[in-house]
Amino acid sequence: MTVTYRAIWQENRNDLELVAKKTFKDWVQDNHPELDLSLDRSSYISSAGFEVLVSARTSIEQNGFSITEFFLREEDGSERRTTTLRVTAGDENWVWVDVERVSDNLWARPDIKSPWLVRSLLHRANAVGSAPRWGVVRLADSPLAVRPTSVQTNLINLIKSPRRECPVVVFAHDYRDGPEATVERAQRVCDSLAGVVTVRILTPGSEAVFNKSIGDEYGLESGEARIYLPGDLPANQHRLLDREIISRSPESAATQFGMLLQPAMANRRPPPIFDSSFDLLRAGVGLTEGESLRIAHDELAENEASINRLRSDLERSQNEVIDAIAELEERDTKVAFLQRRIAALFRKENQTSEENTRAPEEVASVEEAITAARQHLSGVVIPGGVDGGIDELDQTLHSRTWGNSVWRGLVALNTYALQKNRNPGGFHEWCKDAESARVWSFGANKYAADESETVRRKENLRKLRIFPVSHEIDSSQTIYMGAHLKIANGLLAPRLYFHDDTWGKTQKIHVGYVGRHLPTERFD
Image (cartoon, rainbow, N blue to C red; front, side):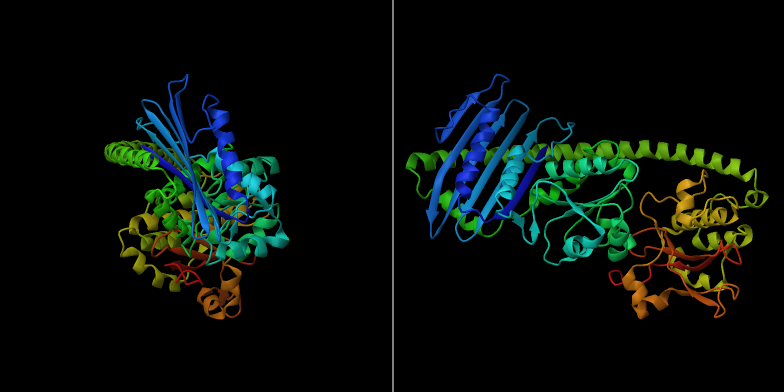
């Protein structure tokens, strides 16, 4: 198993090479005090059985810039860790740290954390104001708090910038565990992914401003965290971690995001300046013949080791496929168990409702879900015009799955409408507080109380969300509906739009649309 941690950034310091050399030597000396760092190349066998090699190439200068390379390899019979620090100085000052971890244990949990070397370099850079940065993003060694008044300037503009290459991790304030827990989780991400991401924390009250500006599909709720990757991507590609995952331990979010970013880190290309720098290193400019031969020998050994690692990776991949099949079978068993439990809860609730006793537990299509709702759900009103949007959904392979998701959503809305003794608040609050098997799950951010400000403001987008209702709701017999259930993601990304009149004259839910995702500024 091979894991690569790669951090690359730009700085303003004039003494970058000297600072990097001192930081590297301090780091090596702390871990291996037996090494003689006065030599360009030194090695020893540690008491734990590790073979340790450290080397430093004298700065090579040409055409107004120089490159310095530091190298540390720690190896025993089953594991090898290679750390390479390269620094260029001239018109552009760059730092590049690669940490390659190779283990023969295919079942070991991979170490994806940032080394102390990276964190120390970034900390010192920020301390002296040398502005370490990845493109337009300033790299800090601690999370930055975002208050409601600065959401647009300090976060929204950053996330939406077309020039951004650095991932942005955003934590929403956890109202249950408090600010200390939120800050600790965010700090662990800063430490574990130093030089790879920038981290922000939405302070209390900021999440509402943030969600309104960025859109509910891309937003956050209390205790959640999301990583915003570069580029204009669909919401489901910006990985969202719910509060349950994050609250397991302070490192949970760091581990999840680290695994997600591992392929991108390993494949990240260095800036062009390193191409010419490598030519100098390969050519051995400024080196003796003996040093050049030693470097060539080391590179040959590295290439042979890479071939062996690729063979091991292939074997690991084959084993992972076998494991994945076994894991799927285990999950299927757990899903079946949970389905039986949910069915038991439904039966228990059905005993107290003659109306729901007649309703089906499952449906075969979206059309069947709509038909069943009209027959059995007295708290939900579905006019005839809704039917026009479901034919396309039922022509896909997901017809049954989407049909049952629509059915569960309609049952949840019906149960909410019929419950007379519920606490004040809307459908979202009821689903969080109600002790019912029929609530709508918000674990994957599958509900929006309204559309984004852009959709509400632009007439061509807003008019697509005006649907027919009873004259009891509005004399025009039409009304704008922004609240919707997110049935699924993907190409069609079906949605169910509704109007909540449970506190009004009809005391019912009025469904206006079931069909493919309606156009937005980002989704067409």
